[in-house]
Every structure is written in C-alpha cells, then in structure tokens.
Image (cartoon, rainbow, N blue to C red; front, top):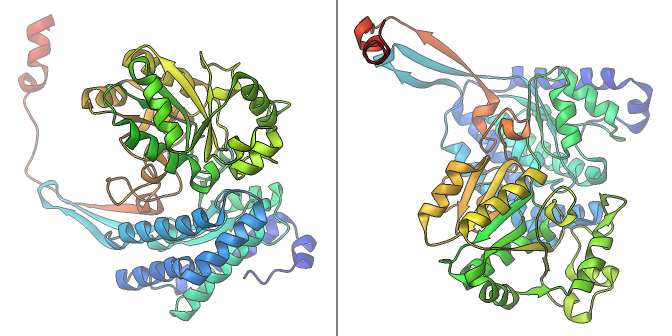
Length: 475
C-alpha cells in the first residue's frame, strides 16, 4: 500500500506526509501512458476488476460490515459489482485524452488534459465501492488519486486500495496512481491532503464537504440525502410498494438515495399502506412511533448503535414486537414535516416516514417542506401514471433529479434503464452548496484546452438584436 508505517506517519507532520504522497502521485502520472486512450482504458478496467472479481467483491463486502457495523454483506457485494460495472461501461464509452471534440463550424477543437493529483474523501457507508468509483474516474482523466478514508472504514478502504494497486501493477501501470492516507487517519491529515492536492472530490458528511470547499483547493462536494417519494393516485400500488421496499432495505438504507419518506395521496392512502405491508413493511402504532423516535435519536443526533442495522436488531433495541422484527422495514405515520419534527430528517435506517396528502398539489408541498428540512437539491421520486405530475415536480422543486416509477436507490446513481451516469457521488447544485448539479462523472476529472481558429464573421445587425425591444419600448 503506502509503505508508510504508523511510526513514519506519527514522526512526520500531516503536510510532510501529504507532500510525499503527492510527489509519488505526480511521478506516477509522469510515468503513466496518459496520452494513449487504450492504455488509460486498460488501467481503468484494472481498477474495476480489482473489486468486481467475485472473491474480492465478497471479501470487501464482509470486511466493510465488520469494519463499520453498517449495512449488510449481500447488498455491499451488489454495490461493489453493479456500480463498478455500470461506471466502467460509461467510462469506456468516453474519450478523455487528446482531441475529444471537433466543431469545424465554430472553429473549435477541444483537447482533454489531466487535472492533477485528486484527493478522494470517502465515507464509512461505502468504504470499498466509493474509493474504486472515484479512482476509476480520476485515472480515466489521466490523473493520480489519493484516498482519504473514514477512520471507521479504514481497514476496508486500505484493503481496497491494496487490490487496486495490485491490479495496476499486474497490468503494467504505475501503482502510485492510487494511494491511501496512512493510518491513523485524522482530520488534520485529511485537511492537509485537501490543501495539498489539485482537486478535492468529497463524499460523506456535510462537515467534510464544507471543509473541502474551504480548503483553498478546487473542490467538488455532494449534498445531504433525505429522499422523499410520492405515491400518486394513478400509481400501480403493488409495483410502487415493491420498488420502495427493495430500495429502502438495500444495504439497510445506508445510501443517500434511500427513500426516507413516502407521501401518499388520500384517495389511495389505505390501499397503498396495505401494499407496503404486503411488500414487507410494518406499520408502527402511536406508542411504537415514540419508541422508534427515542431510539433513533439521542440528544438530537442519530444513534450509531441502531442506524443501518437489520430489522430484528433495530426492533429489539427499540422494544418493538417480534412481528416488527420479522418485517423488512418500518412505516411510521407523521404529519406536518418541519425542522421540529425529527421524522422529517434523514434516518439512515429502515424507518420510512409516511405522510398523508389531500391530493397531488398537497403532496408536492409536503415534499417541499421535507426538502427544506434536509435534502434540498438532491432528489425526489414519484410513482404515477400521470407524467404531467412528474413534470410539475421537475419544474417546481429545487432538486437535481426526479425519478419516475423507479426504485430510488438503484436509479438515482445511474441505472441500466435510465440515462444518468453511474456514480456514488450525487451533486446537488447550489441549492445544497455544491459546485455541480449532476452525477459525478469523468468530465469532472479533465481540463479542456480549446484550439480556436477563425470562421466567417457571425455578427448580426443592430436591428436583429435590438429591434423587438425598440419596437416595444422605443430607442
């Protein structure tokens, strides 16, 4: 891996440790065939295979759950493979070196070039999949990457980087294209990396995102998730319930794209609840609602002992019935979402808040209030047969993504049946204080030089531009 021992790491300052890593990254970039698209793509494929190989996908999934206590192994195996496979598909279809676009009618030729050494700040929820995802995108642009793991997931991320470096070495590429901060990882060490790199790409806590943006280095951050979905009057209720269940329970709701609430219009409310129960949901009683809230939050903060845990574990800790423990997820009815209502916030657990709305217009306003509590800019979902309602959400809500009739966790970060880029980092626009309003992808890891030649003059007359204004208001 980094060949920096704990003794070495403690003997040097964070800035010195980072400077050495960055120097090695720059040397690797110099040695990398980053002007040869075929060689770049081979390196990217090597990184993908490092986690996609079945034995390693399983090992890293098991280690991630043991390391962090979050999620479940089968889901993490799927995350390690499906996201990697989809991202590789996207990357192999793109050109990222040399001439990437020619526009003769505009006299423009575009050349792609690396951005430099990338600092990849990664969360504990995805300590294997996210480092590989970011490394693939960074190397696709001809860059080197240094991973800053969450301390809670360090062992998993370090093992992941070990696999990536081994595959690079096996395929004849500089292994220092991918490095990881040495243990013990600290805020000071991560901060030094953010300050010493050429680009920071930060996924994880909003505190880390804010630190990235204030590091003095160009940074790409992501916003908080808290996905609300609507079940509309025209929805196929059982289809919606099955998709919500599959999405909600995936990796025990660790994904930022996991549904945190469902708003159901009144005309189908009872039938939709029944469908959600058939799909595996347990409807909590008012007394159980209080137990769930008291268990999920301790002094205003999410209880790390119960988030992302299996349903039987959560039910036991919360003092719920055996029937609740046998369910797949928990339905908790609430009303009037607002900052004083914890159930309107992100929960990182198998708890799904349920709201009742008079009609679609009321449902849209409920969703807006939820986003104003948490999740502005991220995404919403709707289950409906009325595309006018879906378009209404897209036109009126401050979110980057509106998913229609989809399992949100599987669609929001790219899917084989929608057109979004595969990623594990979702930009949320200026609404969430982010610099991008799309899924993180290879375009964020290249600089573009424009070769500009002259073309026949394209200069309209004054009347062409000012005429309508002069006609309406005079000169």
